[in-house]
Image 1 (tube, one colour):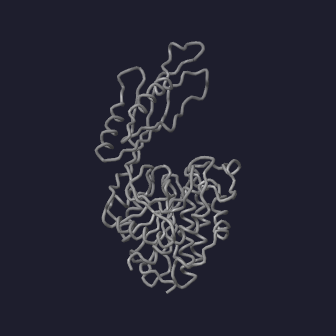
Image 2 (cartoon, rainbow, N blue to C red):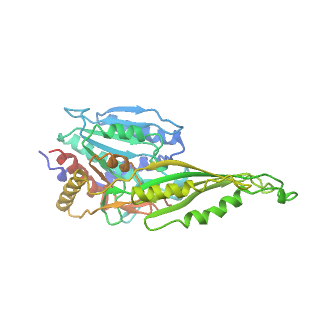
Image 3 (cartoon, one colour):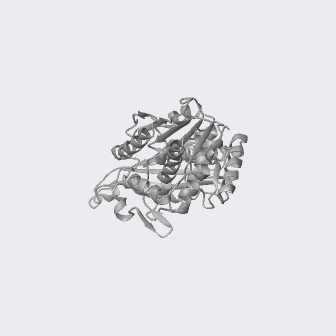
Length: 379
């Protein structure tokens, strides 16, 4: 059998394949854009001989792709490659952050989070198929459209698919030290709204009650609840259209990260306690999507980590394993108790910014890791 570490992975070839992926911008809230990305990937999967299913989007979001890779036992539960194709970058980001290579670094929107990892793990399957290597277990690929907003429309799909499989690979970007994630903190989202009383801001200012002022007063209070183990961040703030009107409605969104379920429950209780209709401005807090705590050190996941560390040693690098914040769809599969190895994708820096980039050396390195994982899991 061909040693997966000897497969002909090539950085320039992978960059050429990645370029159209990155230049097909796919912000979560633009379903048509996400679907253009899914079109591109669907074509590539079909060209590999996979049986590809297009799963229609829900809630105004994009479609998902499920691909059953060629295998004598195709369709049986084996390894699930789980990734998302949406990004946080709006259409037009390419003008400020074009796909480009500078030295040992490659830049582009969504390249680190997480199109780079998805591409690398798909390229590993491509090279295995081309070499005629049969993996011990069949592989299924599931690409989804809404991870960046908490996976509101595809959580049930992910969990149902994951339950059919023995191992889950999530090629989210590697941790800053290049390590993998073997557990994740809980993530909760909250939707806030203040409702006041409108008036003309120049003629009858005193008659109005500003929803903006009330919400602004709560921002410092909410973010002031942050501790090392449970954080609160106001990330969205929307209100007003006319400067000469006292705004009667203001909307905000809050993200909370908690290291344990107890801390999450306490944080949720503190947020929900902000609900109030006692004054002249109403404050309404609604709980949004939540990612459950994925407890670390589960035996199946730790065995996957040990295997990845063994493979990395053969390639010539080290992989650590730790719990992390940030949230991913690995929260769901890990919380179900299914062996899950997360953040095994490319190495880079500054995801979600206009400096998002990856280290070129990590492309071949992680492709070899992927190929060997496919060949040794379940062997």
